[in-house]
Image: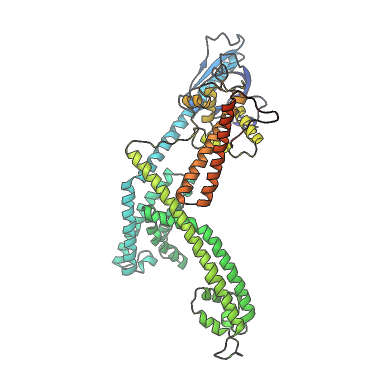
Length: 561
């Protein structure tokens, strides 16, 4: 289906060709027909009847496309041509060899490929220059000098705004004015707005488009600068424009992102807001219920406080704020009760309202806020420690050693299996995707190149030769040709997944032990103890009889514990 959709955009005719890869054995060992499609950027390869793309070659990484000679294995009735790819690129320098039936097809294919390679390479170079410029913009924004200079600009602008409110308050609403002070402050406003717009444009260029707006601080900067530009372009105006113009004072909040301590507090506060909002919704619903009940009970006795629903809900919030709630209670008192007597209905209503909302629910809101705030602060502090350590190592020219499997992104995905059969099915599908030549085995080159091409994993999986030797136990798990069969591939992935999950449990155990969460730590310790007991029993069984076969009716363990 993908090939059919590309037909309209193809620059050459789509035809079948015999695919011969020198990475799976001698030429001619695995000749298979393939279906190829060339678009403006990629040379796509798939097998007839397959549901997915087998391989693809970025045309801007093709270094050579010419006729291949000197290989007698290729049939004399067919003409072979070779496509060389860039070392370290998407295909890792792999060489692709295709064969066509006659000279005319050879000329048509090679001319079309070479022509499109030139066009694609030019476009890629232009994109590369653009990416380099974006990277420079991002690096400039991260420098301490840039942060310090614009931090000074933000503080200076805040001081000017205070002076403007004290000396020339009318200039903030008129966009200028006739007095000298108004003109001076208006000039300051134009200068600061221009500087902040310049900074915003560089940030927007370096992080275009979604990475920019994915940051809440960047979105806030964009709104403040947009309001400032709007106030300069439309001075004076109606009341709503004047209200928007006053938002320029919020520029000082941008200073929070420059200072780590303030940024941590603000980030923790905003991170706690969703949970606090849910608790506040509960308080609001209870207050609305009391407003409806109060209107039904006291609308005739005190229409000033409970005559309508709007007035009633306002009176309830006054009581919750403890602002002159005694006057509200006295206003709804039944006249039948004397000055020194108590109205039981009003007393019960306000006692239940204050106990429920003020003493219980509002305290829950505060508790939720503090709990989430402290948790967010702890996360921010932990991230700050990590950032400081990385910055220190970077200044010394060092890199922190990370003991994790190169297959970690893939193993995280496989760890979502439900049953052992589901895991086997996932591994089998992965093997079929990686086996580009359909030879039934995986060599190191096929495995390494295939994993690296899975760009949806972050970070990209890079499997070294040493990693391959370690996983295959120095080649003992491979066949005679040094390749992996589907069964050997599944066995290796299951072992790697078990080690990966053990490392995950150990990491979480250490973090929770430091945090002092005793219940979860005890649970993980129990899991770890069970794992140690299972490993000890397995070793004892091997010690009693290493070659002993399993008992009748028993099954070997499969999958991670």
